[in-house]
Length: 592
Image (tube, rainbow, N blue to C red; front, side, top):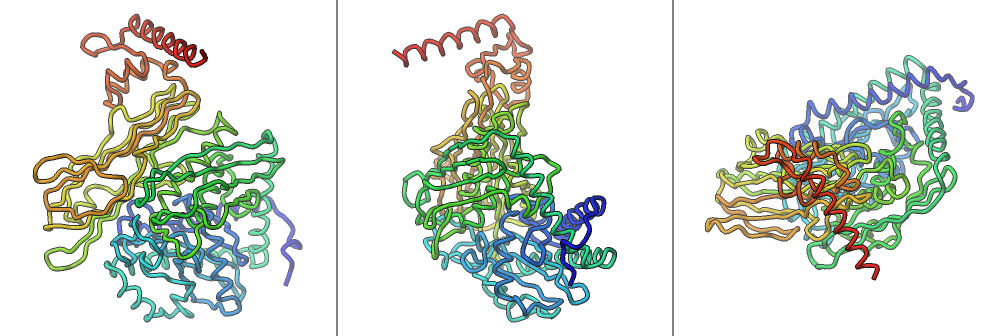
């Protein structure tokens, strides 16, 4: 066998194959969208695809969910360890277990298909899909109040789903029996298998065109190239150490806040990200498996790097991620992890906070990410189970050079909210309001994104279970460079008496027909001094309903003309002068 180092490097061929690998991963993603059954995958896009070499290195990832990128390597590592020497063409391997399979939580089922060409293992095609249900004590698989992983659903260690092209019917029978929506779950799993088959055939086509030796060598060259480019970009930055911390409100059991501390150390062309000093693992199921902690880190750092940099394990070689076992970001068995997405979001916000100290001109303020997970589940009139599962993403924080994006998920997630028509067509609910929340975005030279409001009324069944995991009722999204914090989040329920009752961030309760649940998402933090914001942009926000006239005056010092049909330039100048004087007086009193 020829050594990969013996294959002469060809930069044109490498560029062609780099883009071919990326295109194949995207084609795999398109296959998932076209064949999946649940809107969590095909509409909300909670899945990822990629290609992996024979050693378990990520070669490319589809344009899916960036926060999955770092979880493929530790998961395939368990597959290789389990089946090394016993892999065959036509095999498909799956796992979802965080403690034996390298996964991140049980609803995320990983699928891997070995790619052979002329009996040689070239690598693997890979896909991950978030299942609408995985069994367990609470429908949807995302409850915060599990206390051990055994309550959270079906655990799959690394096992074969297909053996030499033949479906393992016994395994599918076990899967079908343990979930509430067997048709959707089985269909979504098979959609990821179809994607892996698409990737397998495309890679075999490349091997036929270029030869297996060249293809394997160029995969190794691509990793080396990516590492080299990453180090080159880092090497021009100043060395130093930057620490930032953010907090989760609680774990749903204790009222104690949960600290997420991130320390970034940059020395030469190396970057170390350390999470020491975090809270210990908690009783509730918001613990974050370390594979996902790593993945969050890779995604955040990748977001601030040059856009042309390939996304693969070559980039990951440059980053060292560390945490203490037994903490909320590195739990040990049997700690529950079902709602780990909440901690993943806060983890990214702590990372970006540290990166903002390192690179203030490149990093945006804190957004309102996917803190809300909403599940409404029960049985219809024919005793058939239904599960509504949605993760709600609101907005970005203000950016250093421009306003934010309202109503979009963060860069690390690339998630979509589910269309109302799809949800109402499948579930016994009516979504009565979905829109922006005025005055929720943190004031700044560049305004933080306004939060979202989404309301659900139960209509089609007498009752159901309403389970919500959310946060930001105690700790607001932070602003940067003088920008203000975003608004708090909230949950409300209005019952038959029309009394509007506020609910905690994490809860499970009976949802009666006719009751209305309101998910009120936080707003993003602002960037820069609000008094430096162009008054015309403030006026535009008032016209768009994103900022009220009162907030324009109090937060930005912008006064509207009588009737609100324009700006009062003179009054605005005086208002801003008065606010600056009040600030100076406050600073003087604090120093006295």
